[in-house]
Length: 176
Image (cartoon, rainbow, N blue to C red):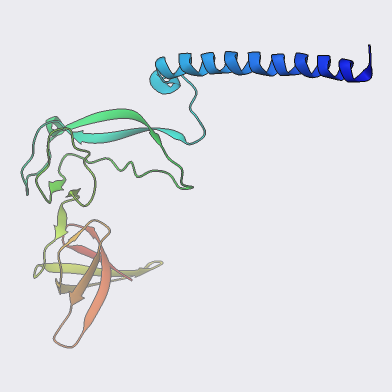
């Protein structure tokens, strides 16, 4: 057998193998596309860009300004595609939080649609606390804005003095 004939035979065999492999690959791809996705079961491994998350959702339609109760909140466990470095926001709404707009049944409960209730109301008398080690100073003032837990609050001491702090409790501000 000449070298050209041998080369042609080898090429034909390799080409046949490639075409056969492509047909098998195509058949496997078609079978996978009609089957359930791999992440359908809770024990299935996830793809690199998928995350298993739990969200709080509205169990019923909720009007603006309502305080959430335990029966208003349901959990939704799902798999999402997440291609960013950080983690997705899965902050859970809690009973006692307040709606800031109308919420539809099944909608994910997240900021800014819902938020923690205000601990301090604008114009309310508050106690402003500054502490350094065992030295603690407490002074009364008036809140210049409404704030939830951890939110910034301005405290007016008198007409010319204003301090900045963070809401740490009802009518209590920790000065910066």
